[in-house]
Image 1 (cartoon, one colour):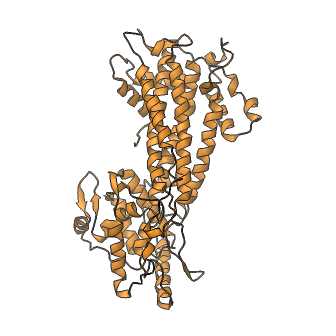
Image 2 (cartoon, rainbow, N blue to C red; image 1 turned 90 degrees about the horizontal axis):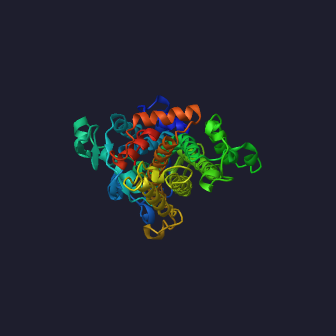
Image 3 (cartoon, helix red, strand yellow; image 1 turned 180 degrees about the horizontal axis):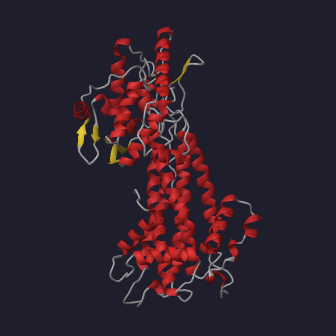
Length: 488
């Protein structure tokens, strides 16, 4: 593994096997040796190494029971409940934990790294449940469930579906359960990898969304016969908000060769959901750009506790496991995306409203045919749910561990909510594209060549007879066309 990744590089690396290089092996061995020597000379207990955890920090553990301490930690902390985490997210979480350990500040033996890497490379992924992390002290419950199989506990799903107990999986490989050394279990379950796995996947999905957004918006603009002037550079130059500048430029790049966009318009102004696309989309662009920067820094961070620092001859216990940087930005990203969905639903509403020479609900025989009336209802329901989901998790905290952990981030809850918002916005945008495509068909639209080609390709590959094909199938086809394979 490399020492530093961009988010894009991480997404590509997740497609490849993990290998323990000689350099990483040496780094891991050096950190383990340092901790062993440090403990031999220490005159006071070292948190999490020869003490209890959380509010039990003052309970000193004898050398003969250090291995029991680590094993008990995993078993008692594996308390997650709820829905199973999708395999893709478990795989990402596992990769992120390997990356964190590879930096050499966690005092984890190469044998532990190799066992987790074997799981990763084989696609033998532990069953991890979605709920249970407070997003501080690390993502304790899900990370514990993730590593249980290496000590012969928990459940693990093999490629193709068979689910084995951790013990049976080890037997099938001819392996014995690992006996964990000082600090190793704590290194495995302290960290922000559950939250961060959601952020990495969110980045991938949002990137696809932002790539398609100018095309969706532009087809709606032309299908609703909107003015092009609100996208001209002078307006955005004098406000000087980067996201706004970028969005306006994207729309102009798509529509600059549209004959329809250049035609005279009856209306002096368009509704905000069209006219203010640069301002609204652009604000979300800027917000998401901020979030991506935080997520990329967290990707390359060390977030377990305590950490070993050989150069300084220190073992320091701090709070790098606290998920606040992720919690705030996961909430912020959800809000930014919700706004993209909210304004998209308004454009859909106008497209089906029967204005500007378009038939009511884009129906062929309005009255007998309800057209796309209820597709807009669905978009409205999803936009409304997103508003509920955007109540921030990061402003909440519940005291835990007898008051020792008295402020937590709730970033795991923010992460779970964000993925639902993403799925909702994908559906909302798919409905807008579907309605814009139908409106363009009703108008016999002549738009920009590239946009026209994309629209026509969609029409040719989709049975658009909404009187024969259930609307849910049309929405699903639109979503698949825009975003490809998606994960809810």
